[in-house]
Length: 405
Length: 61
Figure 1: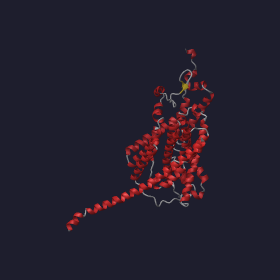
Figure 2: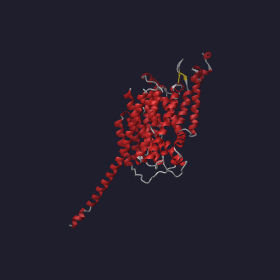
Figure 3: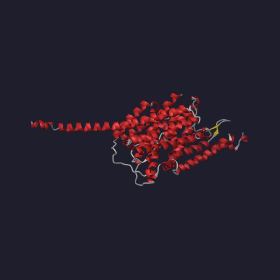
């Protein structure tokens, strides 16, 4: 018995490196290092720390903690993402420690809805209601990436369901990408969501260059007029959220959980329900974001990342976000010409619904050329409208794609 | 396949645009309706205030 003992049997994480394909072993080491890098970049606030720190830990741990499940198979005791057989799933629920959270919150889209509910609670609709037309026009143009990436993805060999899920990266809204990919392309939801969240963290660094490239200095320095802002009461915001939520649920029942989650969050905020606000903001939003990051990291197993589709997804993801940014700026220019030069086109970038990052990007790029120009209220209006239009486009895609099969 | 995808993309964009603009007009309509309601409420409360003077007016007769 003792004679058969090898020292590597004691350290299975290392032993499995030698027992599997060398490509997988190298990918595991690269992903462990990448996980550490994400933690570092998150801690330095270069990337979004709320997602990147748990994601980096998950990525490093899942690729390190591979063990022999039987004499010939290797695996982890984190979770089994693709398990659909009820008996095997029951067994996984009792063994894999993150399986209950994955099965009961990820695979049914609950986690996306919880994040969206939290976004609703922290969202102030005042500026959308103050500037409804300009905000909505900019937001719909900022969906250019969401729309244009769809045929590009189809041309690159993806089917309609997968292409729609990939195109939603252009909406720059994490919960939407998660929801659409879970509804339409479960087979690709892991790589799509990972690519989306990695890119969303980069918008803060990339979009300012796009604004500088496409909008000349004299246009970026335009000061906005704040003399005719209507007063927006909580009653108005509450009435708006009820009416729009009901109308959107009537139009797109498939995306009704998303609409309900967002607008119930808004309604809780505007009704001043202090205990509910604390519950949703402190517990639901942060809890869901933490597990979202951790599970995304855990899903980054070497075998998943070595999927040949990943490279295509990386190209399509950046194309979608780039097109959305350009679309938003086109929307800003349309408002500039519509108002005869009294609208700062830099607000357009805020139509991309990465709340509140793109609104901050718009204000920052304006302040670089004119310290006294305040565009943030308009930018926040466009930003929140972007969230609403992303939800609408999610609803349209999820409804329309099955009809074209 | 790609032509069909372009068609779907156009439908998605146009439907999205129509609904977004519709929402913008819901907001405008909501504000107009609520300000009308406010005016109506202010009007009825001023009538109610005047009515509180009625007993006094009646005693004058």
